[in-house]
Length: 482
Length: 70
Image (cartoon, rainbow over all chains, first blue to last red; front, side, top):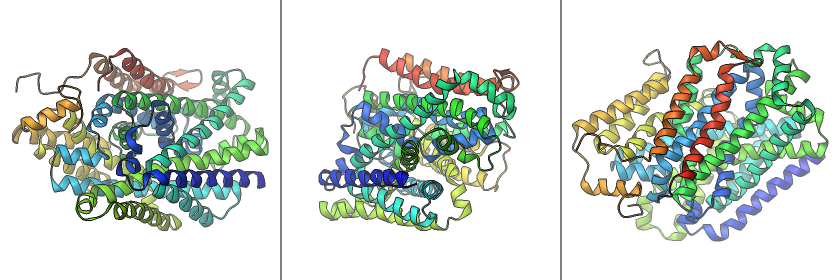
C-alpha cells in the first residue's frame, strides 16, 4: 500500500503546485479567475470538459452499476449526458461564447432583467451543487479509505483542503490545468485496462457474449423501470446545456467554434472511456468475480488481480482524479454563484480589486468548508438528492435559456414565469406534493415551456434593441455580444 | 411578427443533426428495443451505446462541414 500512498501524495502535491503557480496571474483579474482569460484552446478544453463531467461515478460507479443493474440500464443513464453535449454545442455554445460574460446567471439576468432571476438562479445553483459536492466528497473519502487504508474523515479533510486550496487561489486556470492532468490520467487507466483485457479475450463482443451466457442479467434491464430510465436520460440531456460548470467552460473557449468542437470531442473521449469500461472491464469482472457483495469494487478487484502495485497506485490516483476534477469545477461554479452572481454587482461599486479577490477566495472556502461539514456526517436525503439537484437546475433553467436564445417572442414575463414554474413544479412533483403519473422532469419542463409560451404570447414583445443584441449572439449583424 | 420568423434561424446541418438525435433517442426507448436480444444483450443497450458514439460524431461532422460563424 506504500507505493499507492506515495503516488497519491505526489499527485496531490502536483495539484497544489499548479494552484500556487496559477495564483500569480489570476488573483486580481476577474477574466483570468472565472474564465481563464477566454483563451483556452480546443484540445485543452476537450480534456478539461471531459474531466469535469467524469466524476468518481464515471469510473467506480459506472462499472458497479453495470455489474449490478446490467449494461443496458447503465448506458441509458450515461447516454443522456453524452447527448446533452451535442445539444449544448448546437443550442447554446456559440451564442453564449459570443455573449462573453462569466456565468449562466449573467445571460439569464441580461435576457430577462428581473431581481427574481438575479437572486433565484444562483440560489438554485448553490443548493444543487452543494449536494453534488457532498456526494463527490463522500466518494473521495470512501475511495481513499478502501484503497489506501486512510480513515474516512482524514481522507475527506485532506482531499477537501487540497482542492479548495488550488481552486480558491488558482481559479479557472488551475482547474483547467489540473483537469487536463486528471483527464489524461483517468483515460489512460480505464482505456489502458480495457485494452489489456480485450487483448487477452480477442474482442469486447466475445467478452460480453461469454459473460452474458454465465450471467444473463448483465445484458438485461434487471428491475429497472423504463420510466425512471427515461427520466434520468432527459434530466442529463437537458441539464448539460445549462449546467453552470459546463457553461463556464464555454466562456473559457477562445471562440464559439472552438467551444462547439471541444464539447463534442470531449464527449467522444468520454463515450470511449465509458464504453471501454462497461464492455470490457465489467464482463471480465463478472466472469472472474461473479458474487461481489459490493458491486462498486469490481474495477478495483480487476486491477488488483491483473496488475502490479505501480499500476494499482496510478489507478487509485485516477479514481481520486475523477472525483476531484468534477468537484473543483463544481466548487468554482458554486463560488461564482455567490461572489459574482449574488454579490458581484453590489461589491464592484464599492470594493477594490484586492478586496474582490479576497471575496472570491473566501467564497470558495465557505462552500468547501460547508460541504466538508455535511460530508463528515452526511444527511441521507441530501446525498441522495444530487441527481435531483441537477434535475432542479434543468427544470428551472433549460427552457428560459433555450427560448431566450432562439424564440423572438421570449420576454421578461415569460422568462421569469418559466423559471419559477419549472423549478416550482419540479420540487412539488419530486416531493410527492402533486402526483402527475409522469417523471417529474417531464412535468416540470412542460410547465416551464407553457409558462414561457403564455408570457411570450400574452406579454409585451421584447424591444428592438434586445432583438438586435440576441441576433448578434447568433452571428447576425454586428459581431460580438452585448 | 411574420409567421415563421418567430425563431432565430438555425443552420440546416444543425437542424438535421438535432432531429436525428431526438428521433434516434426516442426510437431507442420503444418497447421493441427492449424485447429483442443481440449477442446476449437487449437491443436497447446496443442502441444506447451507438447513440453515445453517434451523437458527438454526427455533430462534429456537421461543424467541420459547416462554415465557421462567430
